[in-house]
Amino acid sequence: MSFWEVTLFLLDGFAVTCQLFFLTLVFAIPLGLLICMGTMTNFKPVRYVMKVFVWIIRGIPLMLQLFIVFYVPGILFDIQIPDLVIPLFGKQIELSARFLSALIAFVINYACYFSEIYRGGIESISRGQFEAGQVLGMTKSQIFFKVVLKQVIKRIIPPMSNEIITLVKDTALARVISVVEIIELAYLLMSRALIWPLFYTGAFYLLFVGALTLLFNYFEKKLSYFKA
Image (cartoon, rainbow, N blue to C red):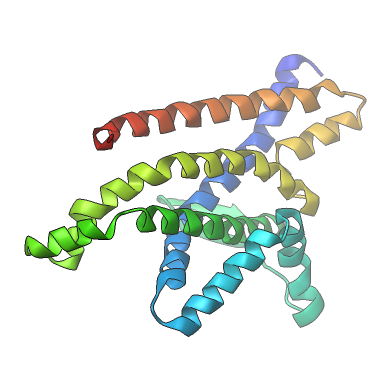
């Protein structure tokens, strides 16, 4: 196969990688906020359950979580994750059972990591700012959206960017349950005695990570008015 043919072949797998990446973000970012609210609630039973859940998810390797989501429902409950078609951004997206299993595992895993980043950002805002807003007659929602939120976003962008960039590379783990992403296709080419495409996949990841790095740098500069 020529260089151009290999590139086109790997692009099919990279499309799956990108799909897994973006869908994970779409679902994990809001779910992480819900988990964060659960870990910070004053209702102790919910808070303790959510803290234990986050501890378990963060303590188990993502690869093992992929195996758990894909195999355990069938082993314990005789339930098979079905193929699924979901509407998203005006399009119908087809998700195979293996891809859907990977997506569920990635969403749960990254939502827990995001929740801790959210919690750290919220708790980093001094109590005095809440009290100052109350003195000025602002409601709790006004204080949160006009005083706290933008500062929280500014503070969580660096750790969030690190996690999101890590997600790009972690998508390669989906191949352990036979999701046909870019690394899986590169291994397929190795069976045809072509080894160099496996190393060539690094260029795809580098370009993707480079674009994300520029994007996050832009966001940080836009929020630079919060510098001390």
